[in-house]
Length: 277
Image (cartoon, rainbow, N blue to C red; front, side, top):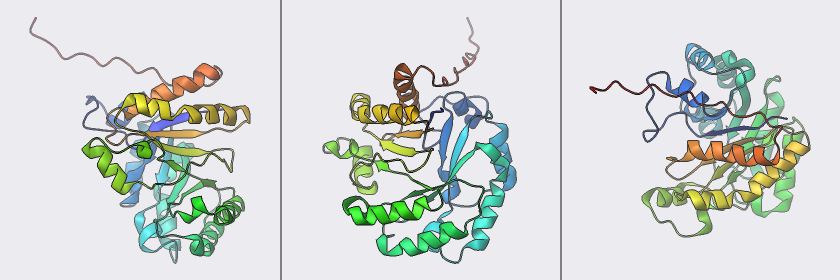
């Protein structure tokens, strides 16, 4: 029984700027992170080895496939690129929670054969999780069932991006307006396919609204834990200023209901800068 929580990044301009490694600082507060940086390019293996050195053994990365594989080539003819990526992330070892396959919004139910072929030929020994954004997968029960069967054949997870709270009322800030334009507006999904469900939850600039909106998710995570599953939850807000604190707050809410959940690390107190008096 394990609960991992984290954010979409391990550094933010509005967060405290530590004197030590930013990833090390972040890992002293959360136990998981979305590795979005890998979407833009396959990192050097030495870079990934550095990530491993800066995080404890129970820390988890969900690493996104590079866009050349998922968006430019749309999972077709990418054996070489995929193997190069998996080789690059080898230093993560057990810290690699899942390979995150985010397909473009235009990737529809008619593309499921492509996804099935990709997952069938993908090297075993890795956990795969897929994020789709085409409305048909959320509005059409037949399409959703087809996707679940494709994923079930290889024990892959479906990652929902829960934007219900974000779209609950009109945006009131630039960050919320920007999120409204960029984030998928789909119905909420709470069904887990594997023992390791992953949810991306995005709230509002308002901490109170964000917390109010995740009540269902706290209950769902408690249920998953009771079923023996080990969920990973990523907390977003439009500007992500409070995301780190919210991730810890979410973990505390679950732990209040399930005291047996391993606590998050207690952040060390950063030394105060010297003063003249």
